[in-house]
Image (tube, rainbow, N blue to C red; front, top):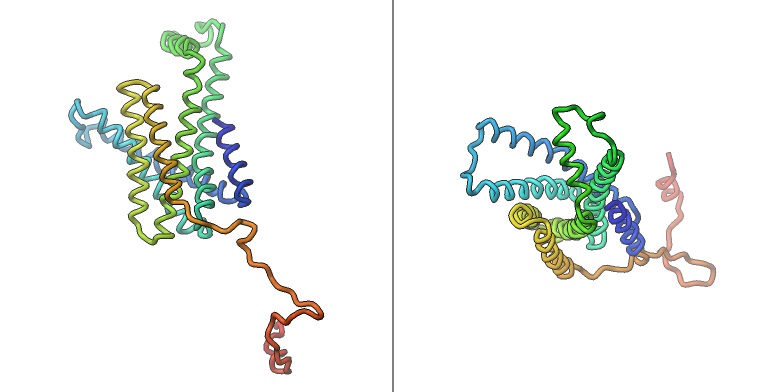
Length: 277
C-alpha cells in the first residue's frame, strides 16, 4: 500500500515532467478534507445514537449507512478538491496535472492506511507466542485473544485485499480529480456534483456489498468500477503539448541575424522613463 502511493507519484511526475509540487498539494488536500470529514461522521453518529436524529427503519439501516458514508466522503473530499483547484493549484488546468494532483490525493491515503496496517502487523507479531494473560487485563483478555487468533488464521491472500483495494481506489481518485477539473476548464459546477455522486456511489456500493456478500465480491465490484474509471479518464483526455514545449522559447538576436525586436528610440525621455528609482 505504501509502495503504491509512492510509486505512482514517481511514475507520473517522471512521465509528465511536472515535478512533485502538485502531488504534495493533492496529499495535503486529502489530509485537510479528513480534518472535517472524520469529526463530521463522529458527530452525526452521536446524534443518531442519542435519538436527536431519527434512525431509519431497521430493514433500511444498512443501505442508509452505506449511502451516508459514501456521500459524506464524496462531499468533503470533492469540495476540498474543488477548493484546491480554485484557490491553490490555480495552474493545474490540464489532464496531466489533474492526474498528478489525484495521485497525491489517493497516494497519501494509501500510504497512511499502509502505515496503520504495518503498525497493526508489528503489534500482533510482538504478541505472537506471548502469554496474553500476563500483558492484557482479565476483562479484555478473551476479546484480545479472539482478535489475535482471527488475525493469524487468515489466508495469506486475504491480507493482500487491502493493497488490491488501494489500486482501485487510487484509479478512482485520478478520475475524480479529472472530473473536478472539468468544472474549471468547461466552466460548469455540475462537474463537481458529478464527482460527488461518483465518489459516493462507489464507496456506498463497496460498503454495502462487503457487508452482505463479503470482501471478495466487494473487490469485484470495485474492479468493475475501475474499468468505468479508466473509460472516463480516456474520454476526458484532451490533447496537450509536450511538457518540454509548454514554455515558449525566447529568441535572441545575434550579429548578422534577422531582427526579432522592434527598433527603439533610445531618447533621453525613454531612458529616464525606464530608469530604476
